[in-house]
Length: 606
Image (cartoon, rainbow, N blue to C red; front, side):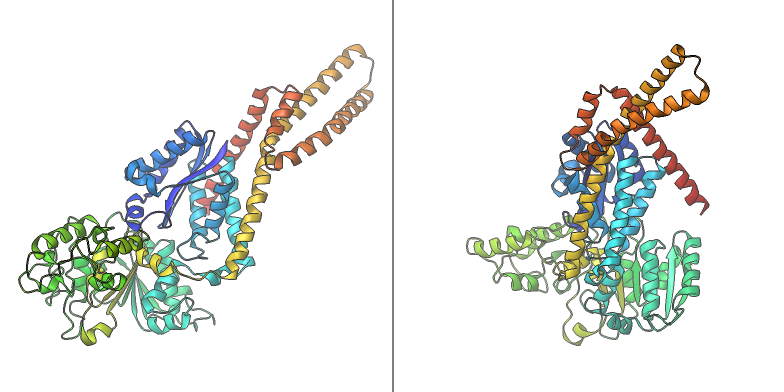
């Protein structure tokens, strides 16, 4: 059997695909069950986070395993296999081990060095153990990955190379550089915070905000008891002792989810990270929450209606949420007549770029594409009501700029207007509401980017902000640790694979000794018990000494790359029964399953 991982992450797939492919807890459990039921796989584990979905399996056939795991991922994620395949990556054997160890150390995270992934790996292992799908290989792999991750954080300064998504997201909201704790504290001081969700990431966000100096933290969760528990923990523990944050303590309270709309009108900063499959905060709800909080005259393009009850002025239904009007949309009576491409950003990238070109629509979602088509159809021929017609370019003359922008778009997407661009003093006014969306699928409607007075940081913008983050020397140290640990794990696994053969050999030798002693008893019945015991012990010592050097040496050779053939050689030389070897392997697996059951019971009692 061999280790195989098939998955997709923020490095291989756009946020929109990751969002659609996100697995619920039930879907992940069904995926594990179906994987171990499939012919190529004997064990499976799923690592599903907001930034990655990876299926690990112990398979006996590489190509069949890749095909089966890819198909199962597509079936359970709800994204068609043809659409999903271009974003999938495959790692096998040592490369798969290297990948998971790198993930555990934070080297593959959106923010390098973040430590939240260790908890997620631990949860993935616990789930596989509870469902009895882990097997010895994956159990050993994930436990070792946890040890490697802890070693990286304790022996190096990888924490300085990056921080958790919570910390990084708050730095983005505060407009501070990496590691600027003082700036975050100055920004957060006295603010009212709303945290939606009570899971590990939301709990970290609540604690981080409290320590940063917010005046109040409100916890909203579908299970009210969990929200109350988190609020109580924050009230009792946050800020105690001297600490780096001055020992301040924020007030904390819990509310039910149906009170989120009311709390939104009072919050200055919102962090949302739930497991919901739909939007938790729509553009309409956010626009209504800030409508009465904008200073006089601030309501302009992209702002909410003055009565606070309207969704978003100029909103266009697209089957998902309201579509907020942007600067160009407000110029006409109907927002759908405006071009959705951010012309200011496009002009910076390529002067004279044609908004009708192929590159202009690269990466647009269906709603934006439909809006763009309507704008081209209605706007190119002449001025729409209340606005000037866009400049028409000769497609041939635009060829070079289209090619240049298309090349840039290959690494991401054509810039779309992600927020209002008010003119005058409003352009420099700080937002009245800051939102941090750490969920996948997203909790906050992306259209919130277009609402005046609102600042949204989500997974997509975090990825863009961290793309050019410098790599510290500590990262190189962690890479050395990962390489060393991968080599050690591979050696241990190769040595372990020969263990059933060695056990079978020693079992066969013990049977031979027992048979010969029985024959001796028949021929020399006059031997007393002491004599018989001495003869038996002598024969066993002879056999043990003869087998000691070969078995020790074969384990050493099997631990080296390419040493798998030594087990076959041992079975052939001593004519071992394959079924005896297989029975030893089955006994080991049963022992592991019993240990998993006991672990689950112990966790239940804890």
